[in-house]
Length: 80
Image (spheres, rainbow, N blue to C red):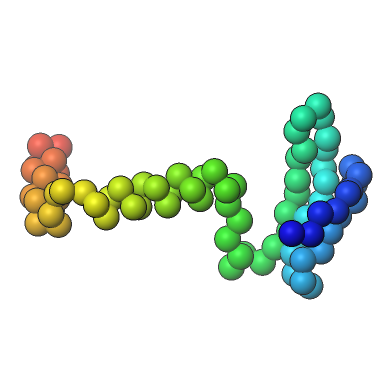
């Protein structure tokens, strides 16, 4: 892992297309600005981990795809 020190207003570059800027520093929080191509996904790690756990839980669900479709169709009919 590369560790760098930066001050407010300074930036780092990752490759040619990604720039990370230090926007604000307050107490124990740092506000970052990220410029990157649209095709580069940028997620907070805790959100990524949460999505991973949710997906894993969904894969292990005891409900079959057929049962899930039936429940969905029932809900759809109730709303109609």
